[in-house]
Every structure is written in C-alpha cells, then in structure tokens.
Image (cartoon, rainbow, N blue to C red; front, side, top):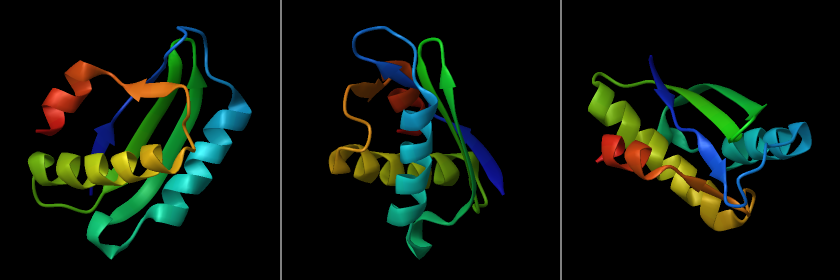
Length: 95
C-alpha cells in the first residue's frame, strides 16, 4: 500500500471547509472501484484548500499515482469539488 498526496487548491485562494472535505471524502469512496485499489482515504480542510491523501494498493509509486489521479479526476468531474483544482506540479508527478 502506497501513499499518494494530492492537495486541492481553492480557485479563489481561500481555505477549505470541513463540510467540503467530508463531502469529498464520501465522494471518493462512492466513486472508487476495484481498478483504483483504494485502501484508505484522508481528506482534511487546509489553509490553501483541501489536502487529499489516498492509500493505494500498488507495486510502484507510479502505478499508485496513476490510480489515484484517475480516481480524483473522476470525482472532480462529478462536481463534488467545485471551486477546487489540483496543483499543476502535482499533476506532473502523476504522469
């Protein structure tokens, strides 16, 4: 099991809220399928947005980041994190 940290930044630059973090965590579990190999989720409000930490069952960091990125992209498309984006540097790490 490997840890993948993907912080979300609020587009307006403000802090995240606990209610948004809870909604995002629930949505991650709801969208997770066997292909994502999700084991654990930690989502917390932060000064710059929301910190997302996913624990993924994978053999390599690259595979874990790929699975986590696919899941987070699916959740972002659902609208559960409207007003947030993944930092460009974090997207490059998942490639």
